[in-house]
Image 1: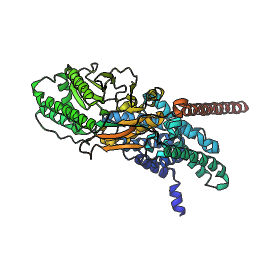
Image 2: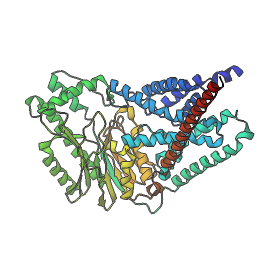
Image 3: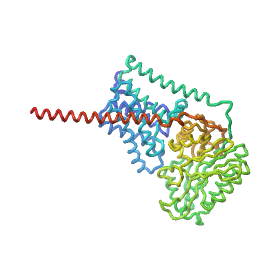
Image 4: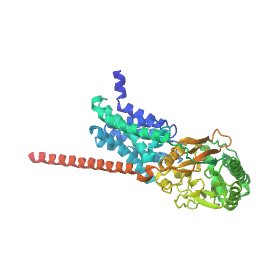
Length: 542
């Protein structure tokens, strides 16, 4: 038993365990309890080794675990991905360094706040730099619905704080050898906070449905459009290629197939692309057919998944006209999502394709055209959006469309709450490696802003949720035959505390972290000054 205890208390064993837990808590596997222990073990390592070991082995551990956890999730070429991951790893070690340099483990129960404050500060600053929250540990907790409800008060920062604080509490108790007399007061305070948070979440979920709720039937449409890339590749190179729907964005097959895209964009009217054009038109026809069928089944709002219909820019007017006629004929709100190709010579400075969604009313009018505001790095161009989320007033509440990656930007998505949107429509396109992680990231925007979400997706799970994150409908792209989702969705959103107080928690964390850093610097200067004076005194005595 003593031998086992000695091995488990080894900092490097803790480092390996921390790495394993963080891998299993990542976007690929997302075992929700894993990050709670992952952070705890990594913090144990950093507190029980020398500073240089944290900088070398801690960063290396974060890098290796990140490589195993995120490869194929991030759609950048491997060399670029590895460089970015090193930068991320160097940034991610900062909360551990702040905790160590501040001697948090010597500061008692109050010292447990240092690591979570630094952790939240880093997450928040990352969103100010890049905007998105892909790296937030809060995203891993989608199986823990009760804990997710704190996002309605503090945003995702409340979730991240609880996970990081657990790591700090665990290490505080370990440092005191779990002696009850020494830890009972702190345990009582922490346990009360966690119980209150859980009780709030359970209570909120229990009363998420009332007899006064009104609903509207909304449908999402997608299809398997891998036939486009396969046909295009054959038209361009005269040989076949097989692309499975679950193919990774980083796969050699897809990278090879993408080589045919630029020549096609440059001259789609070339006779050699006749079969490709026929395939595109066939897919568009299928989308309109599916839309009509869903309207006949009672859907009052129909949404196409992200850029599911590729068209040439000279086709756009005819497609819009057809959508107007269908919306008027069926009496529906129709959100068509298009990838509009602008033919011409390739140039990085020229917009080659526009990713947009267009809103058609039951009267057959074009109510709105929305351009994707946040293009995916390394994969998309800037589409020229005005960065304003539209609001369409309807008998079924206020509807707002955004597109896929847009929903990963909480600061951008605050518009939804401030404009009192009721239903957020998120046409999206994912890939197997981020399924269902990415869908559940979007659900957090619904909880934060008190809105229902409908997210039709190609190559992943499509979800519809209420303002509390409850799933009201779900369709798995890979097992569904028609690949549509249809759900009864609440027509009214709910007010949230987060809509009112905003990012109070990260602001407080930033203040505390800034104070801790200044204190570290002040003490370092003081030590150097004392050392200098001591040396000078010795010199004079000599």
